[in-house]
Image 1 (cartoon, rainbow, N blue to C red):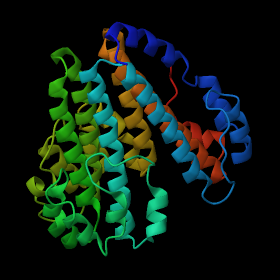
Image 2 (image 1 turned 30 degrees about the horizontal axis):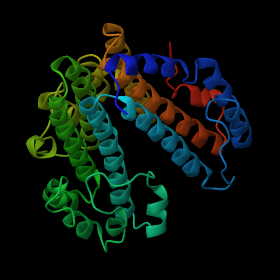
Image 3 (image 1 turned 135 degrees about the vertical axis):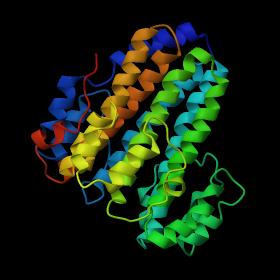
Image 4 (image 1 turned 90 degrees about the horizontal axis):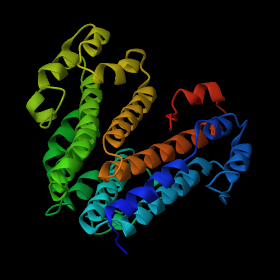
Length: 341
């Protein structure tokens, strides 16, 4: 049942208050092992998860946390006015499908078994593709990509030459980023003009950061065709990417990027890509929070809740993985974004 935006916003404000707070997240991070992590998680709104304590526990927990997040999306979409609800559903369904396609491509690239690839996938129904199983069973990565002809992802076929030239998966992953960005930006046209800015800024922000990370991988390579490798740029221009690739001083090149990119990417100076990802999530949190503060009674509140929920999901996935690896709370907390208010 779709209700008015005002009602949905009121419900969403209440749901934001139900997210795990800083103390709860720290208690989970302080758990000495996975068993205690699950015991402490049981005392939160997540309740008890039935998972086997084996080498796949992190993957099983990721699926459970993602399922919870998908349920939250569904609960919001069901009561949200139709156009807004349709956009939110597409925004996240598309996002998860792109993630699954990346995992399938990586699995094929590394010659992983079909079973391993299937186990790695987010448990969602296909959004724009017909069938995950058909892609997973492909004889090779190239065969897989060619099966996408005629659909939303067919531009991946044009990246096969780069994939072969570099013997690397990043041209495919980068193209998937662009497919997602282009389509989401197109879908925002269904939203009222006042609601488009926050979505546009989040999508472009993520795309820009991913471009820089790929540019770093191209360091030391000569005659990089920037138009071919980076056909889509937003806040970070091709000249910035060229500087990252060619400079002898990567730290200086990162510092010279405009804000917030120089701050988000600062950890790359020490090779800490995981912290860059955490800073990216922090930037999304801050952008959503600022948008929410600017309009406490509209779409921004609804989107902020879902952004917060996705970050909470990522936090819990990171914590469960860390506990399975035996990492301490101090090592884990710097990668966790928990400034809820």
